[in-house]
Image (cartoon, rainbow, N blue to C red; front, side, top):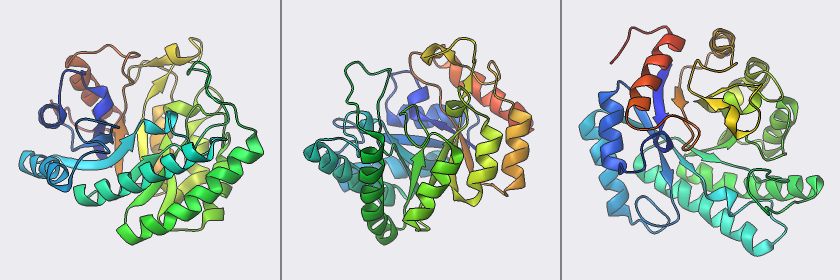
Length: 283
């Protein structure tokens, strides 16, 4: 497996170019970039700008592992408002287009939400309606993914939706596209389950993997902690990933505001991932 890190893990003072350089210096094989609404690498970005990031990564010797986005918390594919759903679909299309230019094979998509506790006054959508809206949207977008040869990775998040690995598996199977799978986040399931069970059940449907850690007793967002400081049983996680033959990127995601920040967290995370992966220390 290859070792990556999400750009949200980096200090906010660093731009994309500096983050790529720091990822390389800290011993990561790759970095996951993120699509923003405005500014650097955003919905506004033109092909020349996007190509620039690809060139920087290639010159640095750092792969771009995938393309995430936090925009789906604002623009949900399951919203009760049709205008918001259409905006969300447009974001997925733009994300797929950017990913194709960057040369990456997977984007991270939050499939919507029934409700979100950590966002004040967030919309609550009846579960069955949310399911129908998400299924319709991802089925439609799977054609765009196929055309661009970039996979949509549906992430398991705290959205009160697709709450079990069986439900996630069946949702993906209903779409029935090789370009739609799971973007599995190890830490996100710990409050209510066991990541090794999800890995076994989702199996070859897993496109990419996020590594996070979580301390159950802390509860809420405060439970997210540095890698190897929480309750994720990483030996079992690794055993499960090896059992399904997963050999792609595992990507650390240290959530801004819930990790000890500054550049040192990048080096700490690299060392923790080396320990999890059984590698010699790389930095």
